[in-house]
Length: 282
Ligand SMILES: NC(=O)c1ccc[n+]([C@@H]2O[C@H](COP(=O)([O-])OP(=O)(O)OC[C@H]3O[C@@H](n4cnc5c(N)ncnc54)[C@H](OP(=O)(O)O)[C@@H]3O)[C@@H](O)[C@H]2O)c1
Image: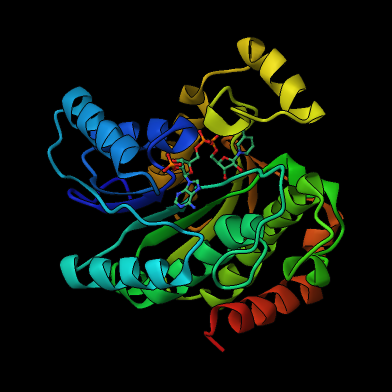
């Protein structure tokens, strides 16, 4: 991987925190970058800073609300029409929401943003990624995936809402998706891995008023900044060490065991089937 000169890398959630730190490092590495986030203003701010600090002009921004499947489809269409390769896809954007909300597609928003948008985007870009092999897909999960044993399918369509459970099951979905994807990609030269980027003082806990949010805000000054997590994403994206590593879970740069729920093949198959139904890919 690291021998490719002008590799193309798409990273979601690149306007802030871990995604922004990883994007800067990949720009310094010489990547042609595709930044994706929701707010055009924050995205432009990140794009300008990344160009200035890396001296790499090849940084494009495509503002997209990942909660809206029609915007994800449009993003995939634009990427396919403007780029002839995609070497690294980093599915990083994520939210933790205190209040339950349904998206315009009628889906619980945490699951829609953290998992389904990335499931849809990855599948719509998969031919391009395979044509670019060797290539890598990295799904940013969290240790929070250990908080639930299964995806509660009823909770994805409406109340009652539990923010912590919704976040945990979206992060479990990131790992299950990675396992199912890695199986499907065997023999293609494309790898898929999941990573826990570690606890980071980022935009993630801003404006959260519940107990967990207040506790996390209190501890922010003692948490790492996003740099170390961004470096872990860069390393997983380009290090030759991972050329043939697929279907694994990483704690930053080190391979780790995911929860036991991730090792049940039926869970990954069911999530794939469900995600196809919920994105209209079936
Ligand atoms: N921070 C932690 O302690 C921690 C720990 C474990 C795992 N993680 C995971 O790491 C990833 C990044 O987290 P972070 O801490 O860097 O968070 P962050 O600073 O809050 O950044 C989140 C990013 O996601 C984007 N985003 C949110 N909703 C979006 C939407 N609907 N459409 C498009 N983009 C959207 C944001 O874009 P806008 O600027 O446009 O809103 C922003 O770029 C997440 O998947 C999170 O679950 C974080």
